[in-house]
Image 1 (cartoon, rainbow, N blue to C red):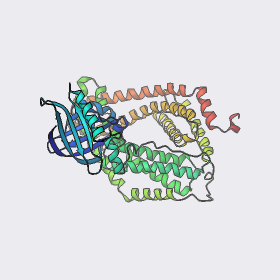
Image 2 (cartoon, one colour):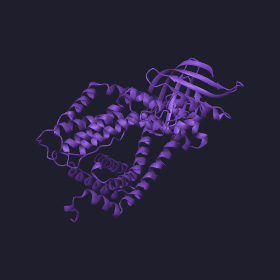
Image 3 (cartoon, rainbow, N blue to C red):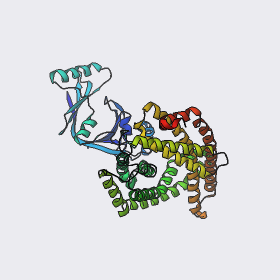
Image 4 (cartoon, helix red, strand yellow):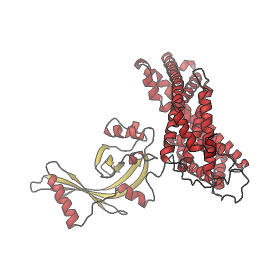
Length: 486
């Protein structure tokens, strides 16, 4: 046996805020010592090496890695999410070579000496000397009484630090009892949404990645939808006050999100153009990025204001207060299942009316209103899905999502056209190369074609959604038995 090195090592684990690598069974670790700095991807369960690369520091985004195996592996998993440090630990690392009588290295043995965790040993076999690994494994387990580790070091470290992988989800499970009072159920729903808002608050302010603002906005929209749609359960002055507050939050986050979408789609913009025009679009990226940074700073300022901090704190305090024994609101003591049935059926009926009125000549506003109604129904289905059999509620959510997808494509194209036109007009003519102007015009034409196609697709999708069997499924689930035959 030959000691090769003894080094102090700092290990930093990385993942996205929503644990995208961990979810796919991968750990990402940067091991830094005096002599080297290496980023390693491993299989979560086995600890086996997937890929490694010499790196001094970890880029924030996967697209910032140089082309290679690590980038090709993590880019499709992380997408737009930033890599964040989730856990750090330091230890002494010994590297030993197991040699034979001919002084050939048969095996590399690595020992990690930790202060807070059990020490660990790992083996790296050498080709043509596989038997050595078996012999040393037998020695470590029988003679030294060491036990194979059945828990990844990452999980051990997280537990000791009071952290839990996959602790964040943008869609928390909301489990309601059908007999629960509606006012109590409402507060329960809003408390889950408030947690999502607070989870994403600092990432939104810091502009860590675009998904923080995305999830922040969705939780805000869901809260506003609940306050507007689940009526008569909270005191009217409170409802009106907080509807106004969450509407304001939606407004101040709108422009930064629109700019985020344009920047996220920028490579797709370029790819949609002829190859000869693609590079001509680059000056637009600088304009959009400058606008996004300015809008982001303004948003951060407002999210640090007294209006935001105090009002959100008041909302949190209100949600913690116990429900009144005898509330005055008409639906407060009504069982939540009864109220859910009524609201879901009413929104479904409204979608059918709006959808049937849309044709190839309908205004953009008509499709926008249909999309908003679909979103309201989708959010309420998410709030209340625990009240219904899973095998019956899931297909309805899926069929509605298909409708939402084409409406979302229409709206996204509409917003992106408006955003591009607005900021294109703000660029001084003298700074816009003629070819860039042509590229932007061509891009707007392509987006307009997508918008027209989405309108056509909606009419087709709505026809499928409007099938009698789908209508029967909604009716059988949400309409009270006493009304089904009317």
